[in-house]
Length: 271
Image 1: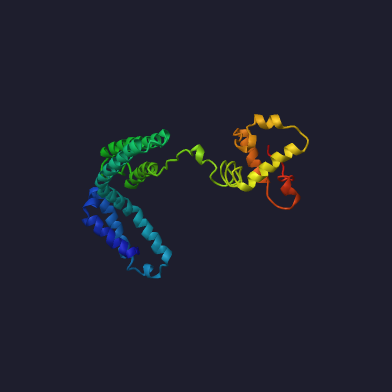
Image 2 (image 1 turned 45 degrees about the vertical axis):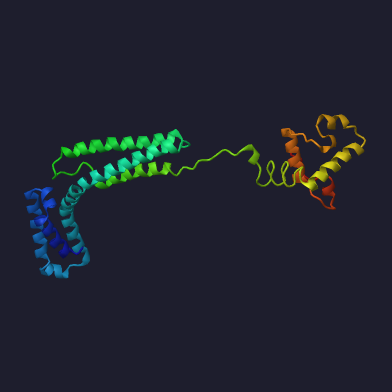
């Protein structure tokens, strides 16, 4: 805005705009109109011709300090009726969203739902308070609330309600699926998976280990019998032995190096 254009626009609104007239008194407008006339006259004086930009800016700010409060009250007056309709629409949408979540998204934590309900109640309390306060004020007074305040608070509640609809359901992983990835029970290198006791290469390792137990002079016959390893037709399925199979699978590799025949002798035992 240049100083001159602001003077012309402000005079037009104060004289002709119904909203500006509704939120200002005759006396208030008369004082401001006189100030506008004085500044307009100054524009045609020699002082204005020699003035720099900072002088014009200072005069513009002086006029804005008097005119802008009226313009702001006029804007609020025009927007408040539209806000009532907007709030009602959003309120209905929020209620529908919450009902949907409660009925169809039972995995959403009750605290999440309670949090949105609390926000909704806080907004309703605030809205009831400020609208009651506004109803007691004259239009020429400063509003009890600004439209943008209500819109921002309403948007927060609506956003939180919408957020609930994006919460994903996380199903528990069945035991049979555990370890289908790399290195777990039934996965690569795990019990019963690739690199586990069902793997042909690893089965050869277990059989070689069994023969070594019988060839080293130790009598382990009772241990093997009690552990359900007879003829390798059945396998001990205890948690301890599962961890043992996984340990053997991780530390064993076929090759000619000394570590291969010992099942990874340099590896630190995890058992």
